[in-house]
Length: 341
Image (cartoon, rainbow, N blue to C red; front, side, top):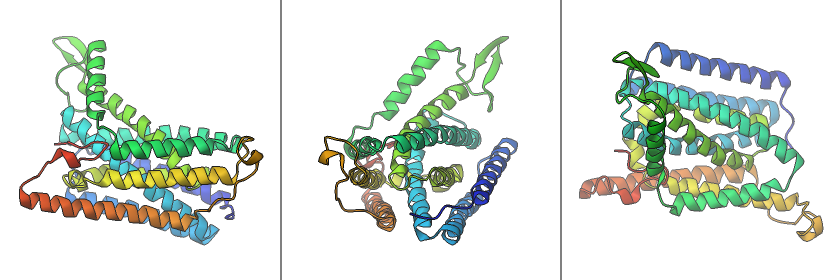
């Protein structure tokens, strides 16, 4: 077991993270614009550097195991966040969100994601503390999610269109955007703008990703503080990454396989952990089962290796397809948000 972090460090970290997020939010509200490559790169490097500095501070205060748990959790959540960007691309494209206001939409999506994940983290920590058998369910769920991510049918775009059509029938929605406004007046009559539908769709997407991400990181650490901070750092800079990667996202055709492998690996780790702390009477008489233990650093190596292999393979194959004139082959699209043209 790692030593506990000082209370002042945990409280101070939360305050600093909230201030950084507030600054980011106010910056977007006051300056809605399309960030340049230089600006987007600078922000992404800043947030990644901030996460690494945070890991070093935890290494200093609590030791390598604690820091390793944060890094593994952060990288897992970061990979899932990148996967989330595929879905954001589909939503932005299908709903014709003006590029100038996409930053605001992304920021709203990040805030919703943080709120939902915060709720799920608190609920998950409370359940884990009382019912150790929940790890069996978490593990089974992640194994199912991994299979679906790798081999499931990509029908999210169709689902979003059905939800949008339903909302348009129920709400009085204008055909065109009015800047970043939620309400507009046309011919003396008040209408909702399509921006409302965008926010609702983004929120629903965040909910689905929160369901996947929280069990995944609880498979790496059971510390609510690490779980929450890893999620915050994974979401920081996500909107800048959206503009920085641009078309590169569509070239990461094997990313969903890398993510599926990570989720499957953590699912197996959760089941093994459940067996280690087993209290279910019908399994080994309610006694712990001697099984292999997967440590934090092994998890970190698997996570980094999976994403590296998926990224390199995607870029190599995409380059070959471009040279062969087979650009935009839908067969290699991501499981979460493939055809985002």
